[in-house]
Image (cartoon, rainbow, N blue to C red; front, side, top):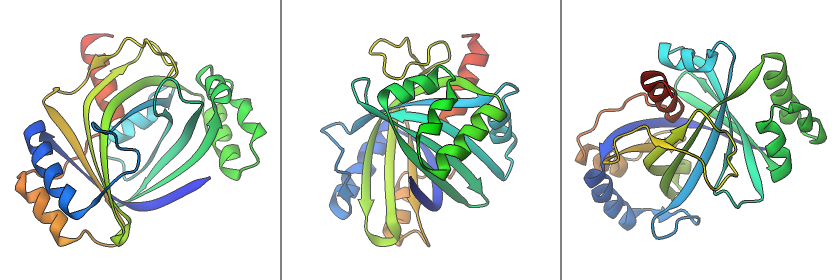
Length: 231
């Protein structure tokens, strides 16, 4: 199991702003090793309770809340990451467990007992939450990400764009999911993740785009679009 504990800030911006800030970051930060010419692809399946508890708590701004997702980096990958993110005040704790492809497929089918194969307390915790609280797959979100890292304060900066989703099919390993846009294709989400304090050069770069911090969730974007258009 991997665990990180950090602050996260999110900003909504235009693609021109993204390219402008990205060009500046190329001078002062390292690109993530997974970046290709256009970054890399992420696909996440989000789980929620029958009464949409996690979605509702996010919309209502509840201070202590969580979300559970199954993530991969392309339909042809042989594994997926089971992740639980918990918000505690200004901090986010993220724990993750690597699952084999077939075990991940079992989770998609709501066979949570497959987690009992893993000798990790986190696997047992996830089994208890998913099974006892009646979690079910709710939405798949896919997007393109470009990431930068810095050694100071474990800083990580990501740009997510071309965000698409579906609430009708949940196989994150399928090469042919029917996905629809949930954010203007000319907009992107900037995320800044760090421990301690945010360095001044990053604050200045964010101010270049004249953007205010906001609360945005790709999961909520997917659910809201589906609710609005009746998908």
